[in-house]
Image (cartoon, rainbow, N blue to C red; front, side):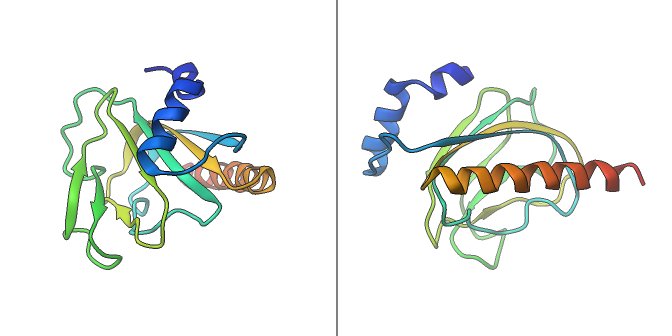
Amino acid sequence: MCSSDLDGPAFEAVVAEKFGVDLAGRPKMYSLRGYTRAKDGQIHTDSKDKIITVLLYLNQDWKEDGGRLRILKNGRDVDDYAAEVPPDNGTLLVFKRSDRSWHGHHPFEGQRRSLQMNWMTSEGSRGWHRVRHKLSATLKKLTAAE
């Protein structure tokens, strides 16, 4: 699967049907990540302006214990999980955002590549997230250099 497949109407239709949501006309936001800090991966749900999260992992043969995304049963315990997803090359994870869509992973610092796509509630929320991600990426680069 490539990014053009993620942008296509066939994939959108499958996701919309699977999760029972109307994605027609909803803006999409893309984030490319290449590095994870030890403090990343804390338990969270995605922000309320995201409808669906799509993660495509781009790492060869993930052997590390940390950095394996866990779909959690609660918002308190990263070891109480329903599924664990190693970020192996080509692994695709799609989930619907809710107040109970907790996820996170044990700490890992180093190269951990992924492409994230989100269907957003509005164009304005997409713009805000772009600004926030650019600021966050800049701060991560500055703190990594220290």
